[in-house]
Length: 195
Image (cartoon, rainbow, N blue to C red):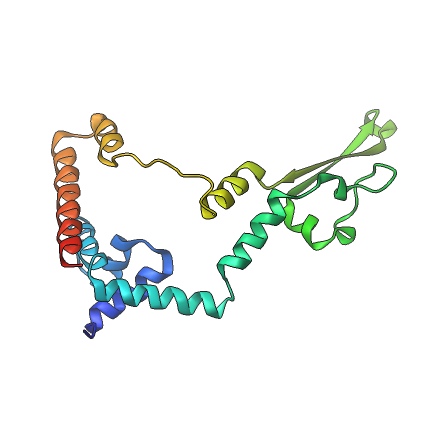
């Protein structure tokens, strides 16, 4: 089935930031936030919309040459990075121009602080303190393991933490949230029945 112009606009807007409510409001100007939340959920379970989103994501991945293999290669660089490659034989830190591609991709930031001795006119620079921060190896390892099926993350009922968080909400706000969650669950159940 062909998408309407508004549905096509929703798909295009959704692919920008993957925020369904915001995409709905941009594609359907004048939609109220509460309506946008419900209607965007309705659109997201539509098989034609899902196919258009999947096609859009695939086209973008091809354009920017992002593949699962490339992502895993980048994660592998972080997971298996050897910090010793950042240093020369004498123990001094290599400048960025001397780092190989793997070392350069593993470094999150470098901080250099000048060290001084004395004060005023007697102040003399005596050296530098260099701090290197690497990307989070544990998070990268967890992502890699999850992708390879070596780590299964248990999911819990989304409504439980939401209900706990509603303690700070006004009763009418909490009820609106619960009604929206119920509508989303109903839309998803209907979509599963159709599939």
